Amino acid sequence: MINYEIDPSVLSSFIPKGTQLDLWNGKALISLVGFMFLDTYVHGVSIPFHRNFEEVNLRFYIKYNSPEGEHRGVAFIKEIVPRWGIAWLARLLYNENYVALPMRHLVEDQHSQIKAEYQWKFNGTWQKISVRCQGNPRLPLPGSEAEFITEHYWGYSSQRDGETLEYQVKHPHWRIWEVDHCEMAVDIKNLYGSQFVPFLERQPVSSFLAEGSEVTVFKGLKLGSG
Image 1 (cartoon, rainbow, N blue to C red):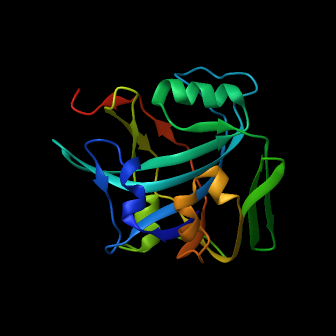
Image 2: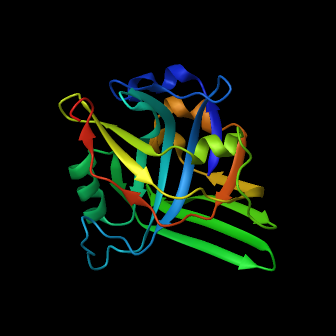
Image 3: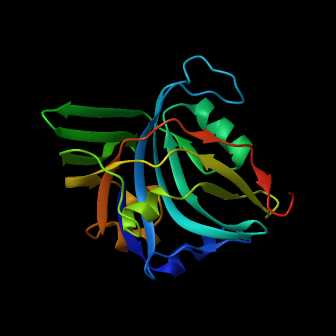
């Protein structure tokens, strides 16, 4: 997870109806996140050749004042996966901005040093995000930026009719490694849009590696539908 501060006005057109930006210490954050889906099931069904695959997404943080209380969640600018069928299904179920590109990854764990790298091929060029860490993972400190970034348990996406779909994401608290070194080599303008260039070309405000866990993504419901 490689994290950047961004001008909130850049995100205004991406905020799903009925939600608002969730700020950390008054700052709007945006994150490049790479991870593996492993042993994946969709509605209880395992789809052959679509169980284990990479994803890289660009996301930001929002919240929704539900009748049960505040829901802290994420919204996505774009999500990259390696197979067309995965992208098609995600667009169908959630209307998320998924694209399918060739992808590969590398995770090395040697002598207390861990490296994680995710690559994708866009416009004929391999691009990547990469982090290197040492030591042992630990739970983020209460109130820390790392806790803020990992502790969002809802997703929101704008639908074709202009309404907003809300879905719950359930997982245990993740331990993290702090990063010694990170790299980002991305065609920001052509992949995400020129408005993101000034912010993603800066040094990140933080980066870390999360150990991950089993994750459940629940069926989405439109806001206000119960």
